[in-house]
Length: 262
Image (cartoon, rainbow, N blue to C red):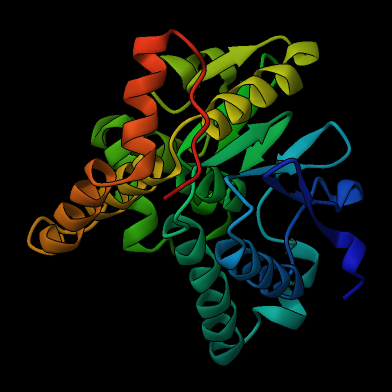
């Protein structure tokens, strides 16, 4: 795979992953899923990364789903389908379990696998012309339990079923009203809104953010699975940290805190 199909970079504590296949509206191939997982693993272990932003290149699409032109080579047999689903599934799980805040910056089409990527992020910001759809029913594709469950938790089962059953495209405002999107902004404001959000995240206490993200990950699991002991320990560690002392002092002194993540 040409590395240019998926671009990763770090800028001032924020990691960016750009799906760069604009001639196909950023459709994703098997090799791109592999590279995506590798980037997530690298950024997960990088203590300098405080947040992750995912976006699509070209201005016309976030991600438009699987690269259908590669179905004959990548998803034509039972074995090939199993390999593709396992690879993409592991990448989704890496994103869902990424221990730092994740943001989907969406312009244009957010379709199929793109929807799954967006739903797997913590926050979703889009421009006014964005469109959302899951066309699995139009293509005869199977859609796994976890993908259905994640969307249902976010927008409610009834709205999720409408998206799956009809396979129609939902405009940005409707997506916002159903709770899929955090904010809809004019196209020329999308970059600044995401930058402002990552700036606020970076200025806040890393241990507090990490504990909240860990709880959010557990909330997404089955009710009988949360690791409460680990979550309680993370919360206690926040109250025992230097950052907690700094936060209190900065508040009393009416200044901006300088957090160190310890």
